[in-house]
Image 1 (cartoon, rainbow, N blue to C red):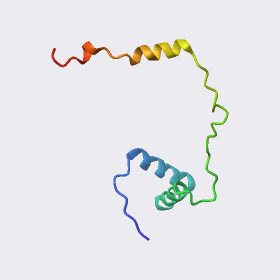
Image 2 (image 1 turned 90 degrees about the vertical axis):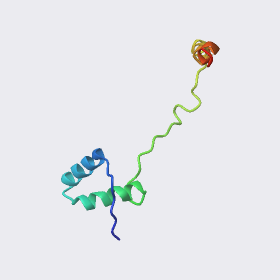
Image 3 (image 1 turned 135 degrees about the horizontal axis):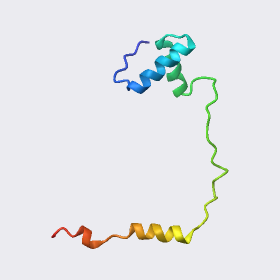
Image 4 (image 1 turned 30 degrees about the vertical axis):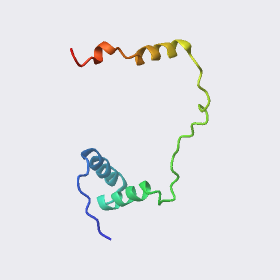
Amino acid sequence: MQYTIRNIPPHLDRVLRERARERGQSLNETAIDALLDGAGLTDRPIARRDLSDIAGAWVEDPEIDAALEDQRRIDPDLWDSTS
């Protein structure tokens, strides 16, 4: 199958070309590898971040709550459309 992909962002182009050079591959081979990785179609393990170490670790802080409440207060004078 043949694809034409347009509007490749410059930073992605740089990374793909750099990887191709480092691996001694063609740009096409490197792009296919990246697509396979992104689609989860390789045997390579996907690094995932497990957040269980911080889940449920929230600590209530009345000072922070008060500061946030103050920031959320709406000043009606600032929203008066007649002035």
